[in-house]
Image (tube, rainbow, N blue to C red; front, side, top):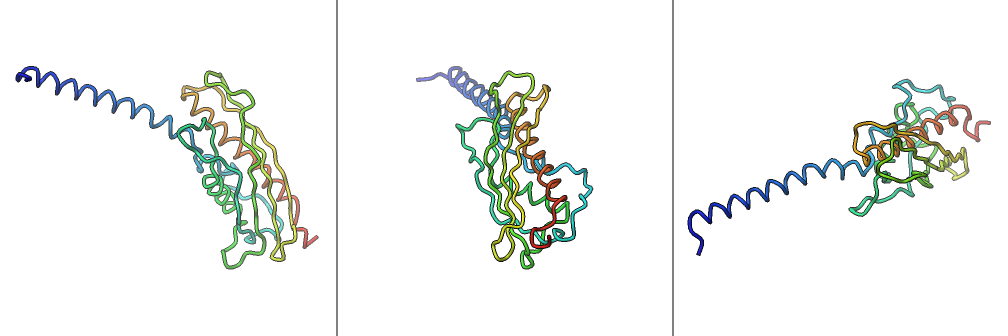
Length: 197
């Protein structure tokens, strides 16, 4: 039977163990959050200024499908780009460039396939992290005829900082997607819809 003094010792050990466990969880949560892409950091970086698009694209696009992204789980490596975050960032990028149409007035439908987002040299103790993204963009008219097809490969390097390595890997993935959107929008701005050529 525990005496009063032993009972206090057991309670204090339990509190100390709980405090340590809570500390570990609080340290690990930001690292786990860093494993999934932040849509806000993937939005095209036009600086809030819309690109000059031909009149054929303005307010005509509806983003129909986004496929090929990874699904994050506890065994995932850092740098995961999920379909939902990719879709949110692409919609914001299209909206800031005045390309999105109301859902009832879609003239063109954009289907996107994420072919891959990868780090050529994987390692958690690198000074900088380079990520390459490959994305296929297909725009179809209402009759399902291709109006624009583009496959974009882009890279982004996140330089060394005081961020944890997993966060730098994730920022590099987000940057690779952002530069991919930038290139896609640049290509789109120079080519009017196929139907109007």
